[in-house]
Length: 120
Image (cartoon, one colour):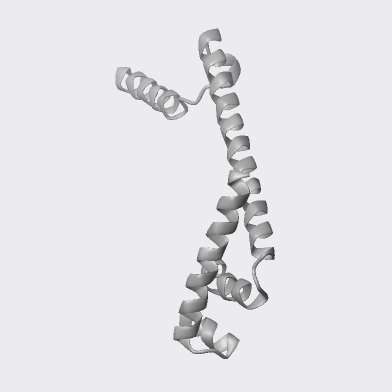
């Protein structure tokens, strides 16, 4: 009989141990305040990152809009879409060397445009 009671107690303790999750209302007030603050900080940081990404995306779109169409296409294919130089050369009916040269020049122009705009 005592073995049965002992095993029942063990089973109960295992089930309690397995479900150690606590609800938000079970936390001590200090823990709840800390958790609220952590969630708020994480939310603010995520919002700041999203705003920075949006600003960077808008700046890139603006700068790409100021490049000649062929250079914009070369950069879009190689840098933004991640295509290889050979793929871009095939799509644009150019040599791979010409794509590399145009991509290099376009990156320099893009950098100059962005530096000029950010410095202003």
